[in-house]
Every structure is written in structure tokens, then in C-alpha cells.
Amino acid sequence: MQSPEAPVDAETVAERFVAARLAAEAVDGFPGGVIPGSMAEGYAVQAAAIPLYPDQLVGWKVGGVNPALQARLGVHRLAGAIFKGNVWKDAPEGVAVPGIPGGFTAVEAEFIARIGADADPTKLDWTIEEAADAIDAMFIGVEIAGSPLSEINDLGPTVVSSDFGNNAGLILGDALENWRDRLDDIQVETIIDGVSVGTGGSPSLAGGAIESVRFLLEHCARWGRPLKAGALVSTGAVTGVHRVDIGARAVCDFKGVGQILCSVEKAKPKA
Image 1 (cartoon, rainbow, N blue to C red):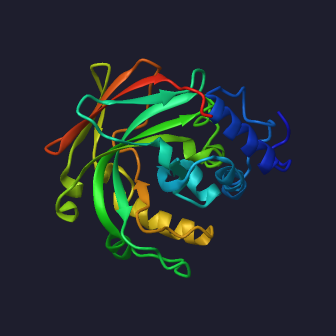
Image 2: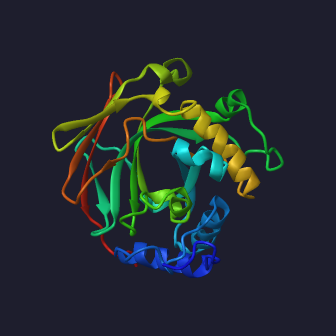
């Protein structure tokens, strides 16, 4: 592998990641072999990839950054694009979601915020109260984490940020009534192939789900991509990042609210 000090060719890496996603094929290591040395380099790749992906951007996933890396990288969360064709409505019989053979796929129970109005593009700093006021609805949901790069999470946040934040899609469940009063009390359990693999809730996230929205409002404004009305924000994995194989079946149980069922099938190439 080349020196980490060498510059990352953002356009070439973006082209390789997008081509692999569209072909539903894994990549053998990080394209080009030069790992982004900073979050800025990782986001430069994602910025180059977004216009290459033939779909409408409708939201963002927010993920956590390992506390041991936060001081060096200067962030506690990261963000990745979600596209319209990769958002599925929950169904009683479950939702089939794609996994790239040889790549990375995981199931993550999450709370999904919807932004109510276009954010002020000049506003770069947000309080937690302002972030809560920017939300017009909160849903239960499941992020399908996914990438053509099997070791994406092992290589760290700078790599995760380069490939759409390791996002492959989002299952949107029911809206939460009175979400401001209920959000922190909802217990969540994820079950994979009949085995409980994690429990948690919004307080499992550092600062909670609303902190993810606050982070994203600031991040996207500073990135020149202020959030728009209707944008979906997948706020973070509350029971853990649960890696799955093709053929796996998962249940994300939001106690007292509802369950979301999904099964992982082999991803098909996209025209």
C-alpha cells in the first residue's frame, strides 16, 4: 500500500466505488491503495461520488466515530448520502434488502428524523434545541449499512466517509407520535436469524439521536449542502452495527411501537 501521506485521487476513487455499487461487485481493497488521511479527504471522495450516482439524494446517515479517534480527526460523528431508490417503506411481510457478495452488509436499528423546512444556508452553528425544532417527524427505521469494500469499517472513519458513509439503504417505519416525550424511553432489540444480538435506545448514542441531527445540520451547512425540507436523517445505530450475510433475516423490535423485518438478498446490478 502506498504512503498515507500521498494524495488521494478523489475522482478515481469515487468512480471506482460508484461503478462497483452499480455493478453489485466487491472491490479488492481501497481503490488506489491510498487511504484518506483526514475526514476532509474522505468527504472529497464522497463529494465526487454523489453526482456520479444516478439517483436523487434524499437524506443522510449519521454514524459514530470511535472515541479513540475523535481528537485526531476532530469529529464525533460522520455522514453519508442516502439515495431515493435505496429507501424502502416497511411492510408487514418484511423488506428484502441488497447485500453485495464479498462486500460489507449490516443491519442497524435507528430512529429516522425528517427535516421540516429548508435550513438557513448561512447558519453554521446549531444548538440541540434548534435541531429538535428543525424536525417535523420522527420514524422508526433500519439502516442497511453496505459497501463494496468488505473491510470499510476496519479501515476507519476517513474511509467510511469516502463511500457514502457505508450506507446501502434505509427502511422507513412508522412515525412516532409525541416523539419528543417518548424518544428516550423506547427500548429497541435487534434479532438476527432468531438470536438477539443487541439492545439499546436513543440514549445509546452519545448525546442521543437529536445530537446526530444537530451535527448534520452543521456539517452539511459547512459542506455547502444545507439540509432541505423533507430530508431524512438516519441518526445512528442504537443496538449496534450487526454485520450479516446474504440470506440473513433480521427483526428490529421497537418496544411498544412496532417491528421492522428484513431479509438480505444478493444485490443485483443497476442499469
